[in-house]
Image 1 (cartoon, rainbow, N blue to C red):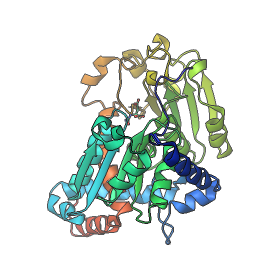
Image 2 (cartoon, rainbow, N blue to C red):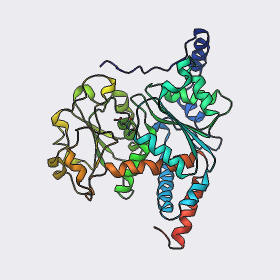
Image 3 (cartoon, rainbow, N blue to C red):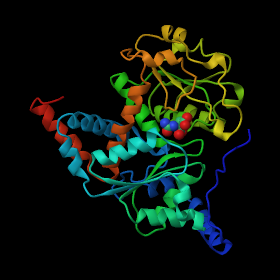
Image 4 (cartoon, helix red, strand yellow):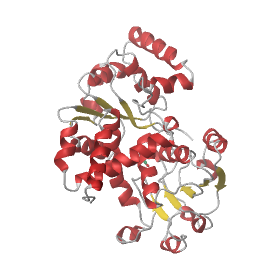
Length: 376
Ligand code: NCD
């Protein structure tokens, strides 16, 4: 399938500059996956750069989910406490692809913690139009903040962002807010939190059905890799042949014990088997038609055939892959995608608190609340 976007990294207009930068980046990429992961951690082993769901483990995710829950509860009554935690610190949001949910939830998350944000979404207003390389613009932006949150079409951008930090001599946490077609680690966290909350923490043995663009949906890849940390997970990938999950990801999760089924004919057969149905839109910005085949749409009938306690998820933005009437079933516990979006804000509060080292204060304060009986 032909790629419609220009997914590359912009190295500036001057070959004498780009040659040198590219050579340094190539050198950096020669490191092993283990070395790259180590480069994402501080000397205590805490993840500082969030580039890739493959770096997560269950301890990290559990602590993050606890922080998110604690922050959500504290906010309901003691907003000032959260607002003081990172007062005066700065978060820079640099988004080179469209975003509503991820961008606004990161901006709000920073605000909840008292941070100021610089938001750049329209690249025509950045100095890259004057020929400045993306490396220089990222390094410049980093020098004004305490955390950098970026979205980019390139599949290499996770490593690029890390490299810019590592080579700058003034490292700040780099958070990948969605890059290329395979990586969206912070969406993976919010999806995981949503699943964990929905099933009271019991995730082992669950069945998840990913529906739609399993090939280029980066949210699918990140969540599938995260769920593979649990035991006895079954994953259905429900998509036409040309949008099926790639072999590399399939192998990755199978090697970690996930039972993989590919369904290319219909969603109907899979709905009654799944604990979570994860709909996605066709990523037509990467080429091909954006039209959704009727046989993969989630209808009112699909809702009726869901098993007890199952949930319907969608990372957004959605088009017509879910019957629009389902949006109006506000009290239906199965319809999880609006709550899922809201969870994004709280998990991003937790993530910013984690990378900037104030997450334990949130959990400890919440523990005090529960001790004195003010759990809200
Ligand atoms: C997703 C993305 O950007 O990958 N959106 C999001 O962050 N919630 C999914 C999509 O665009 O389809």
